[in-house]
Every structure is written in structure tokens, then in C-alpha cells.
Length: 436
Ligand SMILES: Cc1cc2nc3c(=O)[nH]c(=O)nc-3n(C[C@H](O)[C@H](O)[C@H](O)COP(=O)(O)OP(=O)(O)OC[C@H]3O[C@@H](n4cnc5c(N)ncnc54)[C@H](O)[C@@H]3O)c2cc1C
Image (spheres, rainbow, N blue to C red):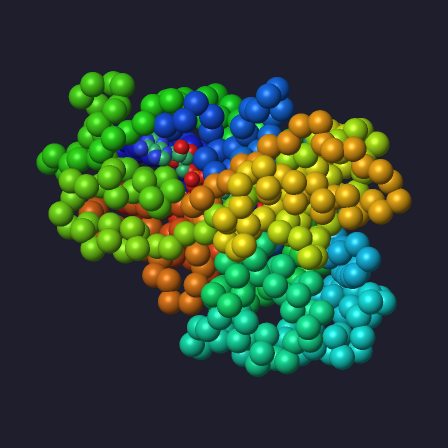
């Protein structure tokens, strides 16, 4: 009987666990933390249940949305907004409810802050990508793509730069134009629904991991939380996990679904994985900082999500409009930048000043509570030429899953879910006897 161990209960590991459990296999999940969700999880601070970082999903996250549907997660747990860029006082670009490309074309037309030169430039970039079938041949930085398609200053600053940093967590000067093109192809380039922005109305552990846990538990899959695995070894084709609470237990397959920087120590016993470990350890990373500010309940943003200009904070989310926590705002600062050198207090202060600037006619009191959370290695830096490992390793039946595994997408929830599903399907190919 195949027995599958999954190390890590982030979105990748849980997607794999659900897929394999669904197929009736014997699966055990090991998670080092008490809380499931990994880099998309709830954290408790001073009585607030916050996410380790404000996330958004896209309508293009087809596999994640399919998994949520399978787990019977109420679709209302995601606040669906049409693609909108709202930079107070500078730009409002809202996609129309029309098939692509008219949804964006009409949005550009209706955005009165944009000139005709801006509108043509935006369409020129989309046309350029479509013409080459969204494949650039040789990869290069996003900033070069913006140069080649003669993007205007306002589009560069308020649209492409912000979208690139938000989607790839890498500044345009360093980000892969090919991966950016893939994201545009499957979101704004696909349809109005694919470009929808989906803001969770519950915390990220509640959104999927808890529901996955219920499904797995009801179907006999054990999840050992607060149970770090130290090392994987193999004897006579069987895998043993150091840290498995059940002594002597062994597995036919292992899916390592941790963040990339945890893989090397887990797989240190396998000489044949020296090259792979080196490849994973060489992945560069970028941080994401989240700033939570709790104001009086009457503080409300003009939209559930606004984009800022001239501040270190790039996006501001009004939790009152998504989770119902009135007055609580979440600021997001993706990738490294000038803020990297600032103290948490200074980041909190600058975030408050950015909020103050949104309410010029109101004397806004300082937040009664604030919290700055920095994930130093939030995602790998999505640069041209970065080599991402395959999910299949040179050791038979030992697989990798996670947002960093080779895929057309940047490190996102969708990439994590897809990699988990791909690993599970690979297990199914080898674990299920061929039909006679
Ligand atoms: C602040 C922040 C904001 C983000 N914003 C967005 C966003 O808006 N949209 C989006 O799509 N993506 C976003 N992302 C990226 C997204 O969160 C990740 O791509 C995704 O969660 C990665 O999932 P994963 O399962 O691959 O890895 P992880 O979430 O890292 O899961 C790995 C799991 O393995 C566990 N583990 C590690 N070592 C061991 C061990 N030895 N034994 C047992 N368990 C172990 C960890 O505890 C963890 O639970 C953001 C990330 C961050 C940090």
C-alpha cells in the first residue's frame, strides 16, 4: 500500500493532501507550526487576528478557486471587485463588465485622468504581448518591456510599476517580463472575471487551511501540527522521517511542501540531491512588509483597496469593507526598497502619514494600535534567468511542492496550489496500479 508523507501544511501541501485523500490514498501531513497556512496564515497580536500579510487573490486563480469550491467554502468569503486601480486624486481605472479586451479598453477610455497617449500606450503593451502570443523569446526586465512599448510616465508609475511589484514581488528593473506577461495574459488579458480582485473576508488560515483540515480529518488523513520534521532518509526504497511521532513508520512517497529555504536541511542525506539543493539555496528572495493601523470605526477608505503614490506604502486595504473590522487598515509594502532600512516605528509613522493624506479635511487621530510585520523572505525574487527546480527530483517518489517550483507564475497562492496538485498527480501516476 502506498503511504504518502507531506511535509508542510501551507497552501501547496494542503492542496496535495486534499488531492491524494480524495483519491483514497493513505496520507499523513506534518506541519512544524501550530497554525496551518504557512506564509498565508493568521497571526494573533494583542487580541487581533491578523494575517501575516494582507493577500489578494485573482479571478485567474482557477485551481485555488476550484479547490475552495471542492471544500465547499462559501464564495462570499471572498470579496470580488472588478479590476480597479484607484489612486486617490490621481487615477481611477476600473475594468468594465465586458469580455476582454473591451473590459480594459472601456476602463481606459472612462478613466478621465488618462490622456489619449496614455490609453494608446497601455493598449500598445497589451497588443505587443498578444502579437508574440505572450511569449517574449528571451526574457528581460519588465522596465525594458515598458521602454520597448513606450509606456508613458503616469502608466509606468501608477499602473505597471505597482502591478509588477504586487504580482511578482520584485521591482520592474529586476522583474521577469515573461512572468509578468504570463500574469497579464491570464488576468487582464483573459476576461473580466479572470481579472477580478478577490479580497479574503476571513483570515487566511480560515479561508482554506481550516476547511482543508476538516475535509482531511473526515476522510482519515492525519495532520500532525507543531511537529517539525528534521530530516528525510531512505532505506531500501522506504522513506523515514526524523521527527515522525510514530516510531518506525515509513512512507512510499514524500512530498516536501515547505518554503524553499527549508528544503536543504530536510534533504541533506541525499547525495544525489546536492545539485538540486544548491539550486534551491541560490534562489534570491524579496521581503513583504504589512502595516496594520487601528483607527476609530468611522475611518473608511473610498474603496476596499486603494493604491498610494508618493508613500512607501503601496496599497492600503480597508478591513472594515472586507472582514467587517471597521477602522482597521492594512498597508502593504512589497519587495525591497528605501523602507528596508527603516525601523518598525518609522514604517508605522509613514503609513499613518499616508492615511492622513487621504483625509485632508479631517483631523485624523493617531491609530490607537498598530503592528508592522515583515516577512524577510516572503517570496523568491522573480527575476529573468532565475532557475526554479522541477517538482520531480532525481530521487524516485520524492517530490517538491511550493510556490518556488518551476511554473509560469510568480510565487503566489495559485502557484503553490498548482504545484501541490502537480505533485499529488505525480504520486497518483506512480502509486496507482495501471488498470488491467
Ligand atoms: C506577506 C506576504 C504577502 C503575500 N501576498 C500575496 C498575495 O497577495 N497573493 C498571493 O497569491 N500570494 C501572496 N503571497 C505569497 C503566498 O503567501 C505564498 O506564495 C504561498 O503562501 C506559499 O505557499 P507554500 O505552500 O508554497 O509555502 P508555505 O506557505 O511557506 O508553506 C510551507 C509550510 O511548511 C511548513 N514547514 C517548514 N519546514 C517544515 C518542517 N521541517 N517540518 C514540517 N513543516 C515544515 C511551514 O511551517 C509552512 O506551514 C504573499 C506572501 C507573503 C509572505
